[in-house]
Length: 492
Ligand code: UDP
Image 1 (cartoon, rainbow, N blue to C red):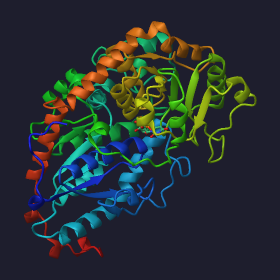
Image 2: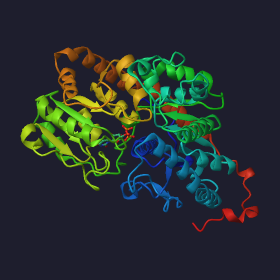
Image 3: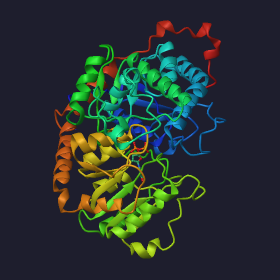
Image 4: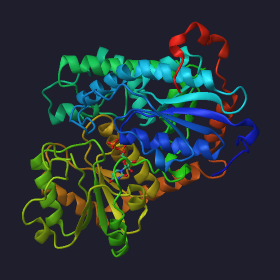
């Protein structure tokens, strides 16, 4: 990528503290950012929860600080990550509560021990949903930046949330109809009413409102917002955010992060590389890659219909079946395929628990991606020039799918509601001749992603600005007084 020479020198080694939200789709971009900052001369300290803890052995150059507190905290589905908006919102609030005191103690201890010159702490970059940690750091005089791991459009939705409540769009009505779902959100194009997240109860709506409002405040009171997006993809949304953010909060659109950083290696599940050998043997553009990310779940009847749709389509598939995809099925293992599936699929379908997704999407054999439209998956598909078939489930996924289908026009919506084997035939259309326009758009977007990280590309410039900003940041030591706060002394 291009550089204006903003790399830190060994004499000016600064340390950046990072704290990811403990879900795969949040951990990956945080570690990609870590890789980027490390390659530009910063020392890295990663604070993390015990739940979904990263594997420190894969990052021997980083310093890892486990934050106790979440050990006894139940997650909605035992050991797995929450799979509904309501459960996620509750879990995010619980993580914030549980980690506050231990994080305060650990951070204060780290500051008390930091050498005067070298490895001076520059900043805490925390996930914007770890709003309490951002508050704690600021209270201790540590500059903060918020990383948001979804789109710029999604943050615009966050800032518009109170207005959408005032106008009656939210909370979403329990009774939905295709007519209502298709109605435009006039104040926030291109969203439609059905793209807005629905809370299943008044209490869930209150929790969602709290998380969104606190996440917005965390960003607005930080000294920078980092987004994993790029100008050519979301230029209007980024321009609008720049108008709305306080001047003290510069916006760094540095994506696509997975293209800027050395191999992420932050996967919580072991990636099965055997599927790459199988892809090597398939004709160009012939395979449909199917994955719904780390959180989305489907009912057992949707799962059966998907399996029979795949088997009956005549196409080649690489299908990620992770444990937990069908709640209650598989007991820690992937859900069992229906009897007779292997014979019906006739060797055209390879199933893995977890794939090396970036590599899969970049493989010449992959012609399309049937996705839940998580933001990382969406950006990864954009960068690989792969058209998408969208089955959004929760959170930001409906909004991401809306952009894919209506704005970027590099994908199709798999008709909403329950999956039927017949609908899976849309897969054939996506990869057939009628998809030339989708492919053309996908390749255009791939080029613009590559340009953004090339010499003088928009993201390259933003990365340099971010590096300069981090080099300038300093802990405000004068507001720290450890002698007066013995509780801040850490055994570390
Ligand atoms: N991923 C992967 N292997 C898989 C499926 C997904 O490595 O088999 C990665 C994918 O590359 C992406 C992340 O997991 O970086 C999923 O993030 P996303 O935002 O797409 O969805 P989420 O899991 O948060 O719903």
